[in-house]
Amino acid sequence: MGILIALIIITAWFIHLYYSLTYLSVDFSNGWTYLHIFLQAFLYTGLFITAHDAMHRTVSKNKKVNDLIGRIASFLFAGMSYSKLLKNHHLHHKYPASDKDPDFYTKSQNLFLWWIVFFYRYATITQLLTMAIAFNILKFVFNLSEINLWFYWIIPA
Image (cartoon, rainbow, N blue to C red; front, side, top):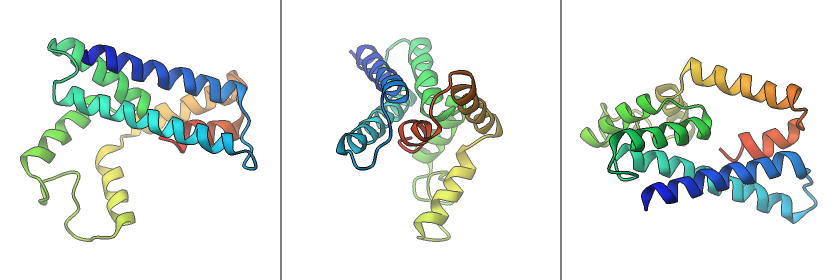
């Protein structure tokens, strides 16, 4: 059942993203624009939850299938490394709310400072280059609208 749910989430994310990027326009006077941005954000959350479930080995009993789905979901979410996520996530469970927890910042309660530290701990140069290359391919090779890319692909993530 976990594999089916994961595939439904990945497929729904892809179909809605394709539809949003190719058939919609960003029009802030139209309420449907906000609905599509929200729906894409919801589907991005589903991708991340799918990757998280794979980290806990609950998508499939088959380790290879489980990790493959986790890698796909992590990559689609934002070009993220499943291996790095998996390593940090296990540290998060081993050392919760401590200096060794990569999801926790003990030096400040400032949300923005936490976000910067979190981003630093999880983002990689490869991920950023992958996203930059994907953005440019979508914009210049497939001639997709830059505003659509921002509001239906980047911001919802």
